[in-house]
Amino acid sequence: MNARATTYRRLNNIPASWGTAVNVQAMVFGNMGEDCATGVAFTRDPSTGENSFYGEYLINAQGEDVVAGIRTPLSLTRAARETAGESEPSMEEAMPEVFAQLDAVRTQLETHYGDMQDIEFTVQQNKLYMLQTRNGKRTGAAALRMAVEMAEEGLITRDEALLRIDPIALDQLLHPTLDPDAEKTVITQGLPASPGAAAERSC
Image 1: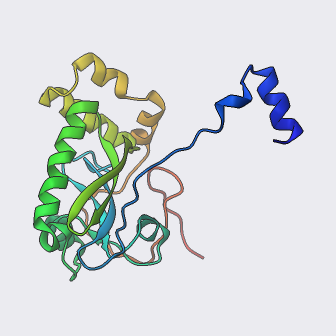
Image 2: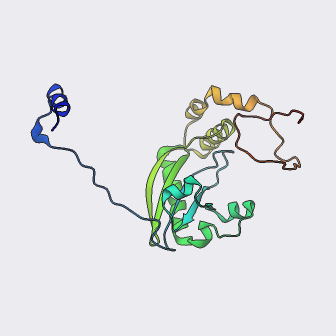
Image 3: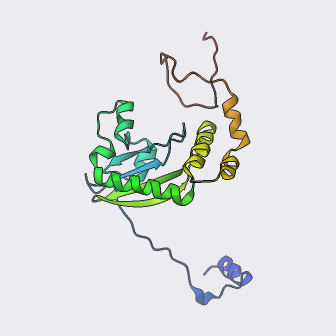
């Protein structure tokens, strides 16, 4: 043991006989073949607040592959795949039994935590493993819709719903936005840096 560790133990009354703590955890692998997968999901749409399963997955991959952009992830649900115009099957279509288990876990997590969850999962040889869950981040509009609908569904009380709305997030709703139903011509793509919409003449 070095001098710094010895001093730390002495100052915090930690006997040397206690040894060192060790974490032991099982490992699961989503990259062992075509019956394996990994993904991330939200129990509701974090952009709109709609009560629909939202997320992405990859077959024969590890978790980092989904979020790092190494491979293009696929939609979890058939409806999302059709909306996105993807040709590859959704998890709902490619692994229907595992997807059904994941969908059941989605409901259990929301009921238990009373909030939209951001979950990470791995499938190893057609067996579902839940890796992590946490309250999911959401837009101001989504937060408002989720709070209202969760109160209506009985997951939370009306008072809890009011406390879920961050006044600063409501500021997003006051910015001008594009009509989602208006016909649009896409001229470029990018990542949003602020809420709302802005217009200016191009030079």
